[in-house]
Image (cartoon, rainbow, N blue to C red; front, side):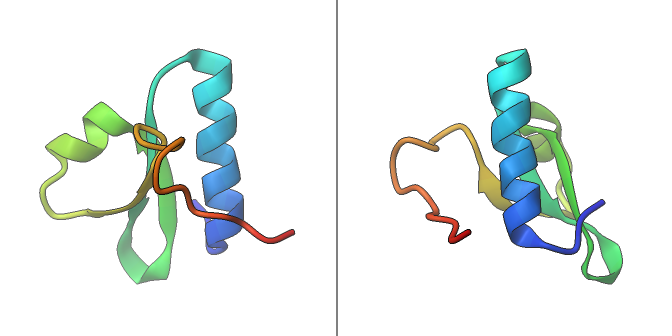
Length: 65
C-alpha cells in the first residue's frame, strides 16, 4: 500500500522489469494506492487504474525526483 504516487509508479516499473509482467497502480480505499498485475487490475471493476506499465513507453508519466 502506498500513499505516494511516485513510489507506487517506481514499484510498478521495478516489478515489471523484475518479473516481466505488466503492473498497474490502482486506487484502493482511504486514498491508498496498491500495485497489482495489470490482469488483476482489469478484473477489479470497482477500482480505478491510475497507472499501468502496459503502455509505459508511450504517453509516459514523467516522475520528478
